Amino acid sequence: AQSVAQPEDQVNVAEGNPLTVKCTYSVSGNPYLFWYVQYPNRGLQFLLKYITGDNLVKGSYGFEAEFNKSQTSFHLKKPSALVSDSALYFCAVRDRHGGATNKLIFGTGTLLAVQP
Amino acid sequence: SQTIHQWPATLVQPVGSPLSLECTVEGTSNPNLYWYRQAAGRGLQLLFYSVGIGQISSEVPQNLSASRPQDRQFILSSKKLLLSDSGFYLCAWSVEGAGFEYFGPGTRLTVT
Image 1: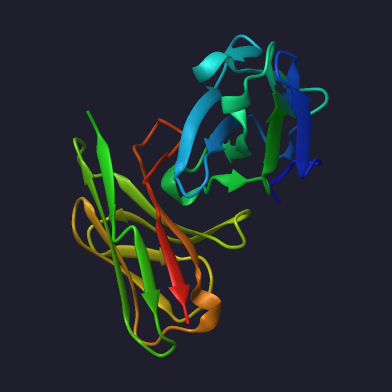
Image 2: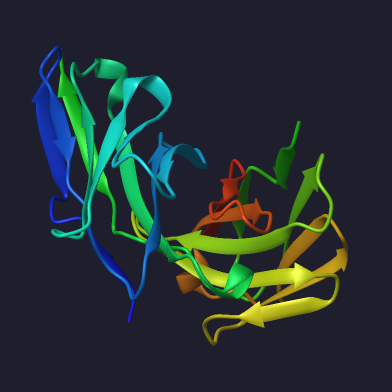
């Protein structure tokens, strides 16, 4: 069965420091991988995706993520955190075969708190 | 450009009352449409998805139902709300090949 794990409920980081939000996945075959961000009482915003090609994917707001097939991980990173990055972050995976009936599987979310 | 609307933004309803949440998408044709519920501000649960008009797939048994009367309209309904129906309801859409979904702004439902 497909699954996504975000092992940290919360990540605390000081403004200006690098941040990492961890994600590991389990899916048969080659996955599509995604990161979303959610601000309080808002819908999810798409940050970035890995489809194929370069393992380092760059996305919105200076975020990037590295696809590591051997470790089945897709950690979200940013070189220098901002207070405004504080939000709930979701990792998601989808098997690249199956169309709409192949569901997007979400992790449980990681709350990122950036202290000034 | 594509836009997704949800209304109402917030809703407070008594137990046993009916529910109707609406989602519409602009700027695309024949999208795949989804309803999610987010409880306790965290995990996302897929409730329904639709690949076309009148085609609804349910992911979990519950007292909710969904309908797609038009290509870009997706409605979430209930005949009698339960306390456990409280949560943040998110509509999303995607197109074949994109792989990911665009989310609406959500509806905060509180059942009292």
